[in-house]
Length: 229
Image 1 (cartoon, rainbow, N blue to C red):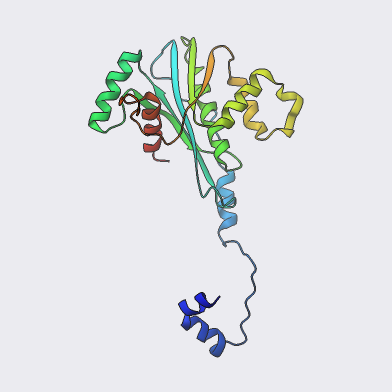
Image 2 (image 1 turned 120 degrees about the vertical axis):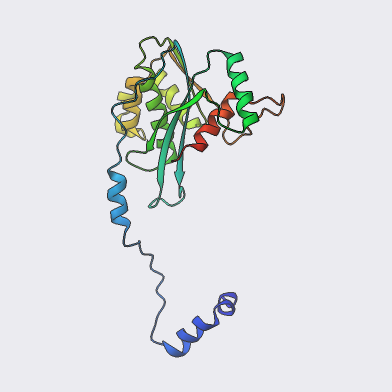
């Protein structure tokens, strides 16, 4: 501890000469406002009414993501979720509008935020990823013309959950499964055969290195990063 004593000579003088009765007790304490913070977090609820799709399409494409501040501090974590919809009519349309967006250094106008919010219950990144997919599914189900929906996520956990819901039995495991409440809600809205989940890389450059062309996945991630969560 010599480097600490050298860095804080005034504090050492106070402890040794002015306050010899003070004792150091290494007892961890919580901030006095922590209970208030927990009450606020416990009030967060995932919306029951999803926004009605502004445009009807047979094929829907969504980019979903979850985030978390202070992820390594369980008592201070605050998680969020967000959903972006891709309104491109086809690949040519998507590439043309994305190229313009790259040149202008702005998010692509075909990528529009559907909804965003804070995570219900326990604050973790995984729950944020789940909430985003749930809201995407509930949004697409409100479009009567929908025949297929592709949902993109950078969470391997989400892909594992979808695989479990499609081929496993959630009721058999019950509350032994983590995030059981969210999984039940996702199971109600997930339509096997109509919905497809895709894994994408997170925090990638928005221009594909092999072709020099902007990618829709990266542009979707860019929109998510720009959202004021």
